[in-house]
Amino acid sequence: MTAATIVLSACAADDRVICQQPGAQLGACAEIDDADSCHSAGGVCSGNSTCVELGGQSIGGRCPHPEVCCTPSEQRHMRLRARVIQFESDTTKFRHDGFNQLADTGVRSASYGLVGLDIVEAIALPYPPQSLDHDYDSIAVIAPNVLAEDRPRLWWYYQHNGRTRIVGEIDRLLTEARTAGTVGAADVDLTIVVTDAQFEAIAFYSHFADESPVVVLNSWSVGGWSKVGAEAYNRRKLSNIELVEENNHELGHYLGLSHACATACDGAELELCCQACAARDDVMSYCRDRLRVRDTGQLNRFGRCTRQQIIEHSIPRFLRNERTDSPRLRSCD
Image 1 (cartoon, rainbow, N blue to C red):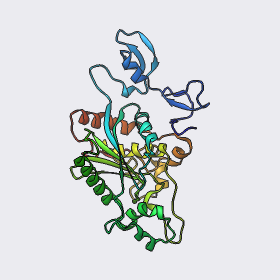
Image 2: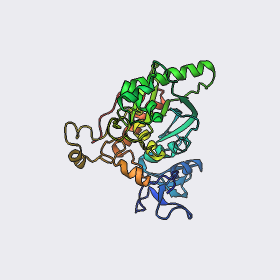
Image 3: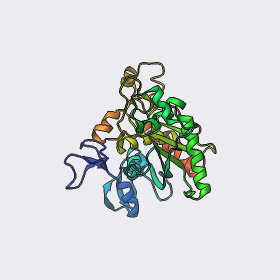
Image 4: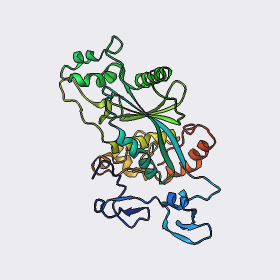
Protein backbone atom coordinates (compact mmCIF):
# COMPACT_ATOMS: atom_id res chain seq x y z
CA MET A 1 0.00 0.00 0.00
CA THR A 2 1.37 3.41 -0.87
CA ALA A 3 1.87 6.03 1.81
CA ALA A 4 -0.75 8.22 0.15
CA THR A 5 -3.57 5.68 0.64
CA ILE A 6 -5.84 5.99 3.63
CA VAL A 7 -7.59 2.73 4.43
CA LEU A 8 -10.58 3.09 6.70
CA SER A 9 -11.88 -0.44 7.12
CA ALA A 10 -12.08 -3.82 5.51
CA CYS A 11 -14.76 -4.13 2.86
CA ALA A 12 -17.92 -5.06 4.68
CA ALA A 13 -21.67 -4.55 4.70
CA ASP A 14 -21.26 -0.95 5.78
CA ASP A 15 -22.84 1.89 3.84
CA ARG A 16 -20.00 4.20 4.88
CA VAL A 17 -17.30 2.43 2.85
CA ILE A 18 -16.94 1.27 -0.71
CA CYS A 19 -14.27 -0.67 -2.53
CA GLN A 20 -11.97 1.58 -4.48
CA GLN A 21 -12.18 1.86 -8.25
CA PRO A 22 -10.49 -0.74 -10.52
CA GLY A 23 -6.74 -0.37 -10.42
CA ALA A 24 -6.58 0.26 -6.69
CA GLN A 25 -5.25 -2.33 -4.30
CA LEU A 26 -7.66 -5.26 -4.10
CA GLY A 27 -9.72 -5.19 -0.94
CA ALA A 28 -8.74 -1.69 0.11
CA CYS A 29 -11.65 0.54 1.02
CA ALA A 30 -12.08 4.29 1.21
CA GLU A 31 -14.62 6.66 2.67
CA ILE A 32 -17.73 7.36 0.64
CA ASP A 33 -17.73 11.12 0.24
CA ASP A 34 -21.19 11.31 -1.28
CA ALA A 35 -22.29 14.03 1.14
CA ASP A 36 -19.93 16.46 -0.60
CA SER A 37 -20.77 15.27 -4.11
CA CYS A 38 -24.46 15.22 -3.23
CA HIS A 39 -24.44 18.84 -2.06
CA SER A 40 -22.31 20.01 -4.97
CA ALA A 41 -24.84 18.42 -7.31
CA GLY A 42 -27.58 20.51 -5.77
CA GLY A 43 -28.99 17.75 -3.60
CA VAL A 44 -29.53 17.23 0.11
CA CYS A 45 -29.14 14.21 2.34
CA SER A 46 -32.54 12.81 3.20
CA GLY A 47 -33.57 11.20 6.46
CA ASN A 48 -32.82 7.69 5.22
CA SER A 49 -29.29 8.71 4.18
CA THR A 50 -29.97 8.68 0.43
CA CYS A 51 -28.95 11.61 -1.69
CA VAL A 52 -31.89 13.26 -3.43
CA GLU A 53 -32.44 16.36 -5.52
CA LEU A 54 -34.36 19.21 -3.95
CA GLY A 55 -37.38 18.04 -5.94
CA GLY A 56 -37.17 14.62 -4.33
CA GLN A 57 -35.74 12.62 -7.23
CA SER A 58 -32.87 10.34 -6.27
CA ILE A 59 -29.49 11.19 -7.85
CA GLY A 60 -27.78 8.11 -6.50
CA GLY A 61 -25.27 7.41 -3.78
CA ARG A 62 -25.54 7.33 -0.05
CA CYS A 63 -24.50 9.85 2.60
CA PRO A 64 -21.84 8.82 5.13
CA HIS A 65 -24.03 9.05 8.22
CA PRO A 66 -27.48 10.46 8.97
CA GLU A 67 -26.33 12.95 11.57
CA VAL A 68 -23.85 14.49 9.13
CA CYS A 69 -26.62 15.33 6.68
CA CYS A 70 -27.53 18.92 6.09
CA THR A 71 -29.98 21.10 4.24
CA PRO A 72 -29.27 24.41 2.45
CA SER A 73 -30.48 26.25 5.57
CA GLU A 74 -28.11 24.66 8.09
CA GLN A 75 -24.39 24.09 8.06
CA ARG A 76 -23.26 20.90 9.75
CA HIS A 77 -19.57 20.93 8.92
CA MET A 78 -16.52 23.14 9.46
CA ARG A 79 -13.30 23.75 7.55
CA LEU A 80 -10.26 24.89 9.46
CA ARG A 81 -7.49 27.05 8.01
CA ALA A 82 -4.06 26.00 9.20
CA ARG A 83 -0.40 26.74 8.70
CA VAL A 84 2.10 23.89 8.93
CA ILE A 85 5.58 24.58 10.31
CA GLN A 86 8.45 22.16 9.92
CA PHE A 87 10.74 22.77 12.91
CA GLU A 88 13.63 20.37 12.50
CA SER A 89 17.39 20.23 12.48
CA ASP A 90 17.43 19.73 8.70
CA THR A 91 14.85 21.77 6.79
CA THR A 92 16.59 21.63 3.42
CA LYS A 93 13.74 19.41 2.25
CA PHE A 94 10.18 19.78 3.44
CA ARG A 95 9.67 16.06 3.99
CA HIS A 96 6.07 16.46 5.15
CA ASP A 97 4.51 17.43 1.85
CA GLY A 98 2.81 14.04 2.01
CA PHE A 99 1.38 14.92 5.41
CA ASN A 100 -0.02 18.17 4.03
CA GLN A 101 -1.76 16.26 1.26
CA LEU A 102 -3.24 13.67 3.62
CA ALA A 103 -4.22 15.93 6.50
CA ASP A 104 -7.54 17.11 5.05
CA THR A 105 -8.58 13.70 3.76
CA GLY A 106 -7.60 12.16 7.08
CA VAL A 107 -9.63 14.43 9.34
CA ARG A 108 -12.64 14.41 7.00
CA SER A 109 -12.55 10.62 7.00
CA ALA A 110 -12.13 10.37 10.78
CA SER A 111 -14.98 12.82 11.42
CA TYR A 112 -17.35 11.49 8.72
CA GLY A 113 -17.10 14.79 6.87
CA LEU A 114 -17.80 17.02 9.86
CA VAL A 115 -14.34 18.63 9.91
CA GLY A 116 -12.07 19.62 7.02
CA LEU A 117 -8.61 21.19 6.96
CA ASP A 118 -7.17 23.68 4.48
CA ILE A 119 -3.40 24.15 4.79
CA VAL A 120 -2.93 27.70 3.55
CA GLU A 121 0.71 28.21 4.52
CA ALA A 122 3.71 25.88 4.86
CA ILE A 123 6.87 27.19 6.54
CA ALA A 124 10.26 25.61 7.28
CA LEU A 125 11.96 26.96 10.43
CA PRO A 126 15.41 25.50 11.20
CA TYR A 127 16.71 25.19 14.74
CA PRO A 128 18.70 28.16 16.05
CA PRO A 129 22.43 27.59 15.45
CA GLN A 130 24.75 26.09 18.05
CA SER A 131 25.42 28.65 20.78
CA LEU A 132 25.61 29.04 24.56
CA ASP A 133 21.81 29.12 24.64
CA HIS A 134 21.53 26.17 22.27
CA ASP A 135 24.44 23.94 23.23
CA TYR A 136 23.43 20.85 21.29
CA ASP A 137 26.86 19.26 21.73
CA SER A 138 26.29 19.10 25.49
CA ILE A 139 24.26 15.95 24.85
CA ALA A 140 27.56 14.17 24.19
CA VAL A 141 28.31 14.46 27.91
CA ILE A 142 25.00 12.87 28.91
CA ALA A 143 24.95 10.28 26.13
CA PRO A 144 28.25 9.79 24.29
CA ASN A 145 26.73 7.09 22.09
CA VAL A 146 24.34 9.54 20.38
CA LEU A 147 25.31 10.41 16.82
CA ALA A 148 26.25 14.05 16.23
CA GLU A 149 23.34 14.47 13.81
CA ASP A 150 20.89 13.44 16.54
CA ARG A 151 22.20 15.72 19.30
CA PRO A 152 20.06 18.76 18.37
CA ARG A 153 16.72 16.89 18.50
CA LEU A 154 17.59 15.13 21.78
CA TRP A 155 18.87 18.36 23.36
CA TRP A 156 15.33 19.74 23.58
CA TYR A 157 14.22 16.86 25.75
CA TYR A 158 17.21 16.28 27.99
CA GLN A 159 17.96 19.94 28.63
CA HIS A 160 14.49 21.46 28.64
CA ASN A 161 11.90 18.66 28.68
CA GLY A 162 10.72 20.00 25.37
CA ARG A 163 7.15 21.26 25.41
CA THR A 164 7.22 24.81 26.79
CA ARG A 165 10.58 25.66 25.23
CA ILE A 166 9.58 24.32 21.80
CA VAL A 167 6.35 26.35 21.65
CA GLY A 168 8.12 29.47 22.89
CA GLU A 169 10.98 29.13 20.40
CA ILE A 170 8.65 28.60 17.44
CA ASP A 171 6.54 31.57 18.50
CA ARG A 172 9.67 33.75 18.66
CA LEU A 173 11.12 32.50 15.37
CA LEU A 174 7.79 32.93 13.58
CA THR A 175 7.45 36.49 14.86
CA GLU A 176 11.00 37.32 13.75
CA ALA A 177 10.38 35.81 10.31
CA ARG A 178 7.21 37.87 9.88
CA THR A 179 9.02 41.04 10.91
CA ALA A 180 11.78 40.30 8.43
CA GLY A 181 9.21 39.63 5.74
CA THR A 182 10.53 36.13 5.04
CA VAL A 183 7.14 34.52 5.75
CA GLY A 184 3.61 35.75 5.31
CA ALA A 185 1.00 36.46 7.92
CA ALA A 186 -1.76 34.12 6.78
CA ASP A 187 -5.07 34.30 8.61
CA VAL A 188 -5.36 30.84 10.17
CA ASP A 189 -7.43 29.10 12.84
CA LEU A 190 -4.48 27.15 14.19
CA THR A 191 -0.84 26.22 13.60
CA ILE A 192 0.39 22.64 13.18
CA VAL A 193 4.07 22.03 13.96
CA VAL A 194 5.89 18.93 12.76
CA THR A 195 9.19 18.64 14.61
CA ASP A 196 11.94 16.20 15.48
CA ALA A 197 12.65 18.12 18.70
CA GLN A 198 12.00 15.55 21.41
CA PHE A 199 9.48 15.93 24.22
CA GLU A 200 7.66 13.62 26.61
CA ALA A 201 4.77 12.65 24.34
CA ILE A 202 3.96 11.80 20.75
CA ALA A 203 2.02 15.05 20.27
CA PHE A 204 0.35 17.79 22.31
CA TYR A 205 -2.04 20.71 22.03
CA SER A 206 -1.06 24.14 23.35
CA HIS A 207 -1.21 27.90 22.68
CA PHE A 208 1.24 30.58 21.64
CA ALA A 209 1.70 33.68 23.80
CA ASP A 210 -1.22 35.41 22.06
CA GLU A 211 -3.46 32.41 22.91
CA SER A 212 -3.63 31.25 19.28
CA PRO A 213 -3.84 27.42 19.22
CA VAL A 214 -0.98 25.18 18.14
CA VAL A 215 -0.71 21.42 17.62
CA VAL A 216 2.81 19.98 17.96
CA LEU A 217 3.54 16.60 16.36
CA ASN A 218 6.71 14.65 17.10
CA SER A 219 8.01 13.20 13.86
CA TRP A 220 9.98 10.50 15.68
CA SER A 221 8.26 7.44 17.10
CA VAL A 222 7.63 7.46 20.88
CA GLY A 223 8.87 11.04 21.18
CA GLY A 224 10.78 11.88 24.33
CA TRP A 225 10.57 8.34 25.60
CA SER A 226 13.73 7.67 23.62
CA LYS A 227 16.40 6.24 25.91
CA VAL A 228 20.05 7.13 25.59
CA GLY A 229 23.12 6.50 27.71
CA ALA A 230 24.21 2.87 27.46
CA GLU A 231 21.01 1.87 25.65
CA ALA A 232 20.04 2.17 22.02
CA TYR A 233 17.88 5.17 21.23
CA ASN A 234 15.01 5.61 18.86
CA ARG A 235 15.75 6.63 15.27
CA ARG A 236 12.49 5.73 13.46
CA LYS A 237 10.63 8.50 11.68
CA LEU A 238 6.86 8.36 11.85
CA SER A 239 5.08 7.86 8.54
CA ASN A 240 2.79 10.58 7.26
CA ILE A 241 -0.29 8.46 8.01
CA GLU A 242 0.86 8.12 11.65
CA LEU A 243 1.29 11.90 11.83
CA VAL A 244 -2.24 12.34 10.46
CA GLU A 245 -3.59 10.01 13.17
CA GLU A 246 -1.93 12.04 15.93
CA ASN A 247 -3.00 15.29 14.30
CA ASN A 248 -6.63 14.13 14.28
CA HIS A 249 -6.40 13.44 18.01
CA GLU A 250 -4.94 16.87 18.80
CA LEU A 251 -7.47 18.57 16.51
CA GLY A 252 -10.05 16.94 18.75
CA HIS A 253 -8.66 18.95 21.67
CA TYR A 254 -8.86 22.10 19.52
CA LEU A 255 -12.55 21.25 19.06
CA GLY A 256 -13.00 21.03 22.84
CA LEU A 257 -13.01 17.24 23.12
CA SER A 258 -11.57 15.42 26.13
CA HIS A 259 -9.88 12.05 26.07
CA ALA A 260 -12.42 9.29 25.49
CA CYS A 261 -12.49 6.63 28.22
CA ALA A 262 -10.86 9.11 30.62
CA THR A 263 -13.49 8.55 33.33
CA ALA A 264 -13.45 4.77 32.96
CA CYS A 265 -9.65 4.69 33.04
CA ASP A 266 -9.20 7.13 35.94
CA GLY A 267 -6.81 5.28 38.24
CA ALA A 268 -7.53 1.93 36.58
CA GLU A 269 -5.17 -0.34 34.71
CA LEU A 270 -5.32 0.76 31.07
CA GLU A 271 -5.83 -2.68 29.51
CA LEU A 272 -8.69 -3.59 31.86
CA CYS A 273 -10.53 -0.28 31.60
CA CYS A 274 -10.17 -0.24 27.82
CA GLN A 275 -11.99 -3.55 27.61
CA ALA A 276 -14.87 -2.06 29.56
CA CYS A 277 -15.03 1.27 27.68
CA ALA A 278 -17.41 1.45 24.72
CA ALA A 279 -15.42 4.36 23.22
CA ARG A 280 -12.07 2.52 23.30
CA ASP A 281 -11.62 2.76 19.51
CA ASP A 282 -12.35 6.50 19.37
CA VAL A 283 -9.43 8.56 18.03
CA MET A 284 -9.67 10.57 21.28
CA SER A 285 -8.96 7.47 23.39
CA TYR A 286 -5.55 6.26 24.58
CA CYS A 287 -7.02 2.78 24.15
CA ARG A 288 -7.09 3.06 20.36
CA ASP A 289 -4.95 0.84 18.16
CA ARG A 290 -2.00 2.88 16.90
CA LEU A 291 -0.14 -0.15 15.54
CA ARG A 292 -2.98 -0.74 13.08
CA VAL A 293 -2.44 2.78 11.75
CA ARG A 294 1.26 2.12 11.32
CA ASP A 295 0.84 -1.32 9.74
CA THR A 296 -2.28 -0.90 7.58
CA GLY A 297 -2.95 2.84 7.18
CA GLN A 298 -6.37 2.38 8.81
CA LEU A 299 -7.16 5.53 10.76
CA ASN A 300 -9.12 5.57 14.00
CA ARG A 301 -12.28 7.69 13.90
CA PHE A 302 -14.29 9.98 16.09
CA GLY A 303 -17.00 7.84 17.68
CA ARG A 304 -20.70 8.55 17.86
CA CYS A 305 -20.39 10.44 21.18
CA THR A 306 -17.49 12.68 20.09
CA ARG A 307 -19.13 13.32 16.72
CA GLN A 308 -22.26 14.45 18.52
CA GLN A 309 -20.15 16.83 20.61
CA ILE A 310 -18.60 18.24 17.44
CA ILE A 311 -22.07 18.81 15.99
CA GLU A 312 -23.61 20.32 19.12
CA HIS A 313 -20.63 22.25 20.52
CA SER A 314 -17.68 22.68 18.16
CA ILE A 315 -19.35 23.61 14.88
CA PRO A 316 -21.80 26.18 16.37
CA ARG A 317 -19.00 27.87 18.34
CA PHE A 318 -16.72 27.87 15.29
CA LEU A 319 -19.40 29.45 13.11
CA ARG A 320 -19.94 32.14 15.79
CA ASN A 321 -16.17 32.84 15.87
CA GLU A 322 -15.97 31.62 19.48
CA ARG A 323 -13.23 29.48 20.97
CA THR A 324 -13.96 25.83 20.36
CA ASP A 325 -11.52 24.51 22.96
CA SER A 326 -13.30 26.11 25.91
CA PRO A 327 -14.99 24.79 27.86
CA ARG A 328 -13.48 21.30 27.58
CA LEU A 329 -16.28 18.79 27.14
CA ARG A 330 -17.01 15.70 29.22
CA SER A 331 -15.21 12.47 28.44
CA CYS A 332 -17.02 10.03 26.16
CA ASP A 333 -16.91 6.63 27.85
